[in-house]
Image (tube, rainbow, N blue to C red; front, side, top):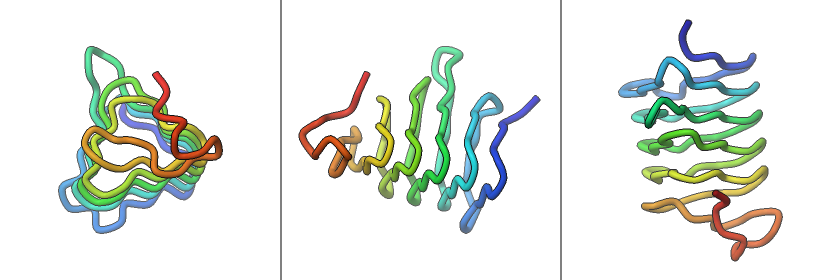
Length: 107
């Protein structure tokens, strides 16, 4: 079947983007260059609406990226990112979230 995204899906400078066939994404998802959305043990990422993923970021396994969330450049996301949060780093950690920066990533 292939990856499935809602309307308004944008690949910004699409060079080097890798998207597993079972990835699901909402409306208005924006991916920068060299992003990887990869499966692990048969589970793939699910991206909410209005998600932005920075250049070189890796989102791996059955994680959920919440609506209006942002993933920073070169981040490696291995756990869920809540709605409206921003995740950066290796491994990714929250730097802003509706619950505050100390909320941490959810499992």
